[in-house]
Image 1 (cartoon, rainbow, N blue to C red):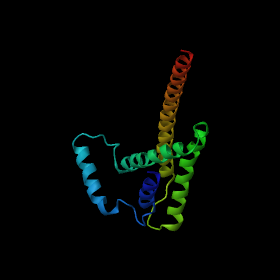
Image 2: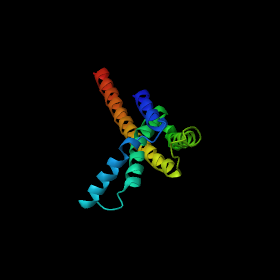
Image 3: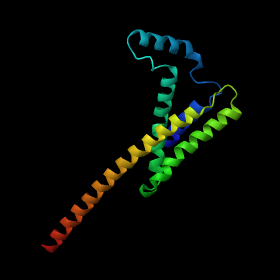
Image 4: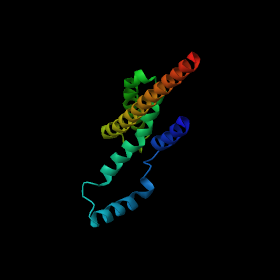
Length: 147
């Protein structure tokens, strides 16, 4: 799963031109239509792009948090921003048509942080459940052995 998502992410971020360039006009028309139908004005192209970056990096943080031991989860918090900064540097210096911004790093980092926190909560719940199951199993074995 991690390899598949990694390939998808690499495709998205290292495409030589902005990934939405072919549909830029359609996006602008769709946003304009949404505004005419009452969607607040702050929901513009920049908002949607930033929100998309957050969503794109939630799985990154989730997978990073699964790759490190549970007690080292703060390390996973650093991996998302580091990956994002690396991507933006590559876009800045190697992909002329791409635009590298600190806003992308911030949005990506927020998404990765959400993913890490979700994974940590899930892992903690599963660990607590597993400990209870093991405890119950051991108690049943002790009572069964005592009989």
